[in-house]
Image (cartoon, rainbow, N blue to C red; front, top):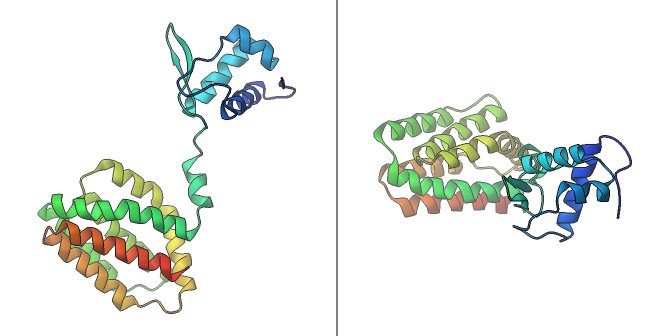
Amino acid sequence: MPQVRREPLAEQAAGLLLDRIRAGEWQLGQRLPGETTLAPQLGVGRSTVREAIRQLAGRGVLASRQGAGVFVTALDAREDWDLVLRRADIASVLEARIAIEAEAAALAAERRTPTELRAISRALAGRARGAESLEEHVDADMAFHRAVVVAAHNPLLVGLFDGFVPRVRQTMVEMLRLRADFDEDADHRFHRLLHEAIGARDTAAAADLSRHHLTSLKESIA
């Protein structure tokens, strides 16, 4: 069985434990052996095993239950969200936008308040004024879409959107630079129709418009 040979010991031990979990040695919900068993297997002290477990608990893989032991709560460590977004290609980003924004548009049509509808109207006017640069145009566009997501009254969707924005912004700038045939008038017409659907509380139309628009963007870069 492989053992830790170099520093940092706790990080190395955490890596070995994670490898064994990935390999199926312990199943989801199964209890790990105790520190006295793991320490000699890994070639480290019990305190290092405790630190390795703490690291994997922080990554969502393990959970300590007082009086019961340490249990497997995930079969792999979640990746850093920013790193995942940086690695994502344009098509993947647009697919994720479809999943988030089509539902948000439907919820916005159902739940929006007069104040939120006015905020969407202002954002629509902002993107209609034109911009001096591609980046400014994308920023105005993102402001419109965020106003729609906020009107959905779902804090998780807002959190996802806000975490997504830096990569979305970069992706949209890249995509628009690649598209010589981009029709700005047609694009703005979609945003106006989405605003109208939300104002009319037409949930089906709002979701369909959002999904169709983003799907069209994805297909244009295929």
